[in-house]
Length: 311
Length: 274
Image 1 (cartoon, one colour):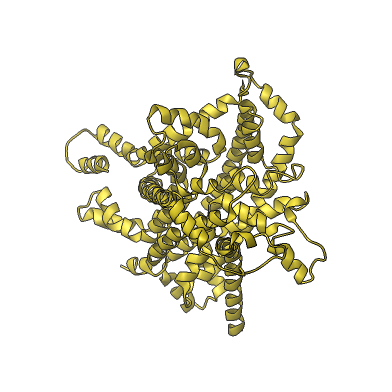
Image 2: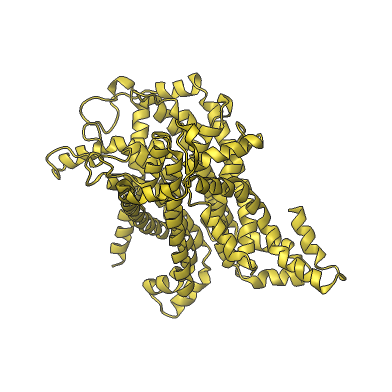
């Protein structure tokens, strides 16, 4: 912090050539960025480059003597691997399904929480709690809730005569992934709600008052004031959240282990089992790099669309 | 129409609460149920007999008090450091136009795209070089690195919402840019700052993988790692695990309660009037 202050205060002292003043002005933003770039570069970027490099290697832990560069052969294997394609499809369903419900329900909750009501503080603290539960514990709890013998969901459905026989979403290949999505929505609503709530708080009340004077109804002030203010937060939240969901392994790993019959296998659970069960780090790195490329393309598309559609 | 709308609001609030609370209630129910009644055949919605034995065991016979302390130290430090870095970064994104900007933003996003499991091996080597293995500082740094990108974009949005004229006025009055940031802009972003702190705190609080891999000493372990001790290959000690997990939510509840004041309430509306 000291350093920054120095740089900015120097600008005001007279003297020094125009060129160096210009240079200082050009460098100024980088002083603000420096700590973040150091931490990210050293701790995430270097390992990431190392990981991408491993994707071009044969690297199987129990076969250390044959470790070495193999060019693109891991990628050729990837294209032929039916499990990769299935996991990719499941990753899409998992990410999109979780995202849509987390987003819309989180936005709904934020809008409900903006207006005061009795015990709002307590209510808010409680509905935000799922966020702070360690994911593997949340996964184990949801697995219990879905269990057809000891779980309440199947029991309640039968008591309400909505089903005649016990149901376990997680053991049916048709529904296993959606069972995990439900648990993930439970986890993710608070995240969206709290970011949107903070963004809503920063909208000046005067705007609503002026709109009300102009005779705008609540729907019109929502679409003309609230939404435009929220859009920047929405874009970045959706973008990063989808990247995180695609990378979120713990829940599915604990709830279904990717099964039954790989029906809930997403790329990251597949990567996890390739690395730590098959001990094939080279191929796990290849799968990871594929995910990186796909997510990178997605991020580029989102930011381009955002640039074209300025609200 | 008005009453219908109010009724709809109440129903919606109730449904949200039910969805959020039910799994948490289930955790609590297990924690308060005596072990021998846990797997009784009929599904029970409340415990027949209540017991505090699981809580007593966790507090007296395990190292959980130390794990909670470790989690608190690590999460709070991470929240403060990450928010500090994110504030500087978000401010640079919001107020400066510079050539490397799209590149830096892309870099921030890219660091989030690679599966963590594959970062562990190379990171382990880096940590060994820097003597960060088995230290809280190591955990704090990696949690900071992982949480800063989103926090920075969040802060950028909050800065974007604050009129530049305010700090320009301060600078005409003789403040440097940095002083204007501290005295004029930051107080206005307080709800955003607090949301960012809360977001990072929670992200660090529940993290398992890095804490599991990088910490050896029992006294330095964080509470999610502690929960794993109740799981063995063939058996899960549900009673004690859920009791420990429930205790682990109390600090978060307190933390949420503390930051609520800033998150809700018209702090910004008052301030931007001038």
